[in-house]
Figure 1 (cartoon, rainbow, N blue to C red):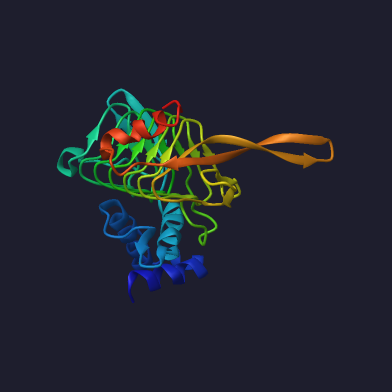
Figure 2 (tube, rainbow, N blue to C red):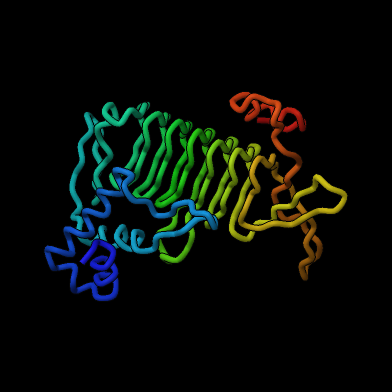
Length: 270
């Protein structure tokens, strides 16, 4: 039986968690997650595919682990899941007090300012996780992404069929942005400060004569800022938050520089 078959069997019958073979399969899957050998979601020709069985393995891992004290110098934690280690060998820069949990993959060249990366997350090479940014469980962060200060990338374990948040290669997520509920941000898109994206948030493209409404996806190279629209309630008309696509990053601008310039060109604060 392969790992997937064993995990799926234990998911249906939790009494199997007592068996040594099942425990080894679950722990091996989480170790593979930690090393980047498997991931909760991965790109395909038709978009992204969610590997539900891996999420099941993460959920089943928790009851197998016992609470223990983890000491890091003068600091102390009390949890079931250990901390990621061997950053020098991994080629990852980790500034105190950055923390990644065991079972999260952090690729070579990632910089972690004081921040948090949860189990099941995937953070690809060259990405900056800036101060007090959080990467939730199973979130997928691409190459050369910039998660600015205070960014909240939501996590998802249950329901297992729910898609994780996906931030694709080269995207820039501005300060205090919140991206949750399986929203996907396309390659090289730019989110201005304080943009909030949930699964039900309206994303309105206002670059043409007529607005175009999207949900759950920010197209590649889009420049996005916070906005609002009027919604009718019984008590009256009120402004409801949304996100506005106001332009595209220009091909002529250098990739690294355009992260900020794309916003400044539209008179938007970085």
